[in-house]
Amino acid sequence: MEKEIKRHVMQVLCILCAVALWMYVIYTEDPEMSVWMRNIPVSYVGNETLTERGLTFVERTELTQINVKVTGRRSSLTRLQDSEIRAMVDYSAIMGTGNHTLPVSVSIAQSDVRVTKISASTVTCKTDALVTVDKTVTVTTSGAEALGIHDLTASPSTVRVTGPESILTHLTAKVHIDFGDGEISDSHIVSLSDQSGKFLWADSVTMESDSVTVSATRSLDVKLEAANLPEGVEIKETVYNPETVDVRGALSDLVALEDVRGAYSVWVDFSSSPAKSGQVYLSYPEGVEQLGPSHASAEFHFE
Image (cartoon, rainbow, N blue to C red; front, side, top):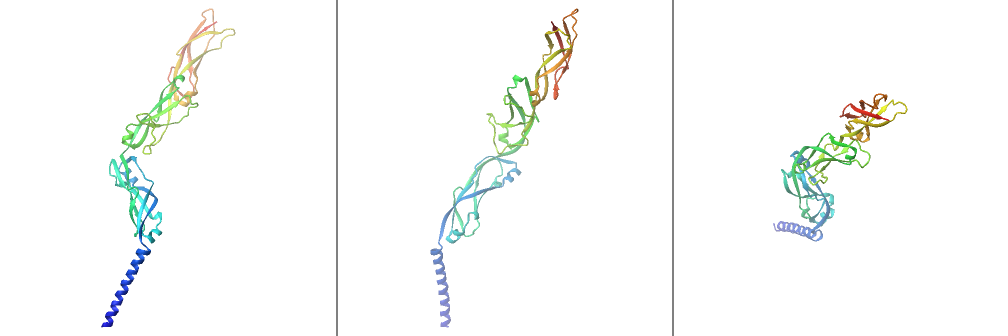
């Protein structure tokens, strides 16, 4: 019996010695410590959830990287890689419009290492209702008056814009054409501007199509000529009405036009009158819509 007791005592002592040795190694040779893991990338998830809920961002501050302080045994920290640390912000927690503060959550693949501090723990954002509206396109010009161009309209006349309701309410869709820039193209880009007239460069606002064509009306001078004049007879004066006629068409076609022409065949008989008058058929340029009369009254005075 005494020998059996001594044997059990020796087993307990051996176990205690082993535990003590293990504790010594752990706390002396492999102590617990903390280190900073720097430039850990931050990922963002849940954007599609906002769209499903009819929400979009108006403002947001996004962290690209953070620093993370981790604590664990030296042996574990030595093996720890940056790729095992994941920093994430989840937008799916947002349920409505307004200002929001969201936590930056950090997880570590190694279970024996824990996060004790991070350089930035939250991000802020502001959300608004996501709406789609049709904005009427306004066409403005510079230098059009000198060419007699007016009544410019865009086709299509509206553009479909999607974005935050608070921003879209104050937006204007515009096309500005400077006739001093040279050649006028068939397609023009629509820009969005706020109440102050500044162009909007917002990632949260999109247009289905930002290209339109522009048509206009142009007042062209009527040019009349007498034909088949006998030799030695010259025109002293031509009086005609109207002196200008409006045509309408694509802007690029109108810029290239010069006038509306007509010709009146006359045979001068000075025994009756030196003036000949009548109706002249007007020839309109191709590619334009005729808005004026088809004929002009002409009176030629000869010498």
